[in-house]
Image (tube, rainbow over all chains, first blue to last red; front, side, top):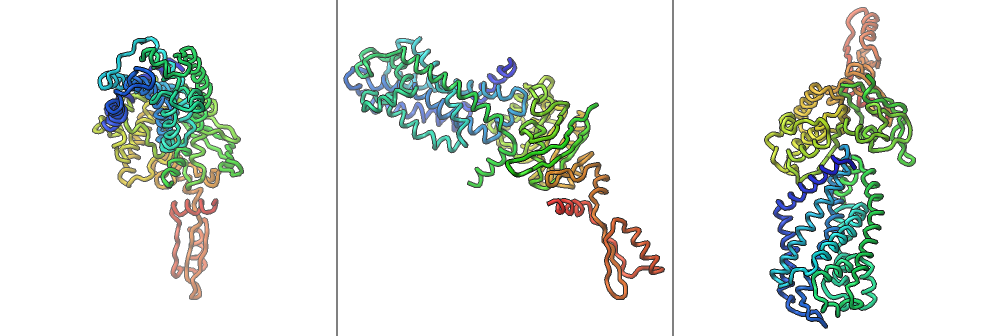
Length: 278
Length: 281
């Protein structure tokens, strides 16, 4: 990667981020879909307390939604964007340009980070204003968990995006597992509410650890009564997220290279034709 | 100066199917060259190999002095590529995407000048996804040449155009090629387009080049036989020949005067072309 591709990629990512912000439908979906549903949930059950603790559901859910925002952007929005870029020929267009693919990947990452930042701020603000959640007491932990959590899932999302046949399939294939993980990973309900087998499965995925790390930054230690092992286990948070990051970084470049190298006009046309006739 | 494109014995196999069976091509710098052939003849495969998007099975290929399979960014910067049915970057503004892609090159066209050249100044602020088909194709050309390429590839650029849009597009291409001294390789299945635009044309049928040359040379090369008809002993007689003039003269000599019902029909270039691709198929 040269400096020019990096610079153009950053500009590209910012431009696409601004296009999303200017797009009224996109903006409505984000505002209503993310902040709106969250606000309703807060109004509905935000005042209840997490069983066995004096922590309010509103506080608990704020950290949970934050974790889920990062997770779903990386593993749902990103793969769908990659698949769409492939189907519309964006990837191929950048392949015709010197340094285009590097700039494209940088651009995608920048757009994603901007989206995550905007939505995280929105969730946090909604949690504080509507749910009466306190601001995090441990900002350094909040930041490193958000960053490491992002690095853990973004390469993974890129890899998934390369494997998916198209943007529609992405929604169909990813929707259900995402919902499943959302329910079982302790970001909406404390994980100790789940049967032990489910707890073990949840702990294999990065979402649980990201949620745990964020709760450590937000919630008082009174919450520990509802956590596995009664501890924030921050070293484990760091280790598991780092392991996912490494796995993703080993996998993603191979798949991205394969997908971008294979791209050509006739292959794109074949797929477009197949998509039209199906 | 060396040729812009030089191809020797190019072969391409997909599994057991052989799509290209020994293609030879030589495209000179600064010429507009068309690769003409029916659908499925291997035009797109050929052009994708030249663009470095597909690896060949056998043969020698040199594009601007470089083997496309080993072409790096410096080589790619000298190429412009316009594909069929591009629908990318729909959410970008027209001027925005031209300016964005121009940044990848050392000496790009000025985006506003380019917009004027392809007749999209009025659409500069519009979203790419809202352009009409013809406008979209002109934008694709603008994006193809934004980096001042030495060699421009156009794959079936006027498919789906109405005659007026096609005419405008031809004028645009001729102007661009003349102004920049750019070499242009375009594929088409339309003989009239090839005849009108190209300095030279190669006909690709069944994975081989069956004829190559200027429009006049091509016409001679592919010219099908003429049909001579006349009446003799009350019956209609016909003769097919490469030299209808001589046949008529011989008939006149034989008849010692006017030949009754004499009719000579030379097939048009289009009919000749259709017969040629019919023979190969």
